[in-house]
Length: 92
Image (cartoon, rainbow, N blue to C red; front, top):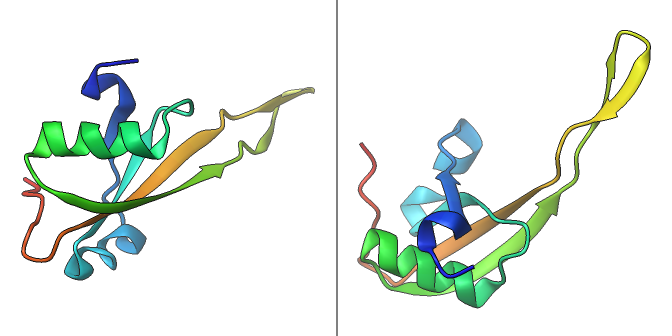
């Protein structure tokens, strides 16, 4: 897993995640096998910013029922990336 596009899946833009932005923090969905060092390098390479630190957590999938069968949504790994003061990611 060397490619930054494979590690960083998307930038999350919700009401809850926009609370982080004034503090130079951004929320990403990342590959479940990626570690903090790989996430840091991928964000620095893709967005051309300097990362201060990375916090990660796994959001476990929920049980869903489709007709008479039980199923599960997929687990997701999320990362809160804090940038060095004065840096920001331009979001269109």
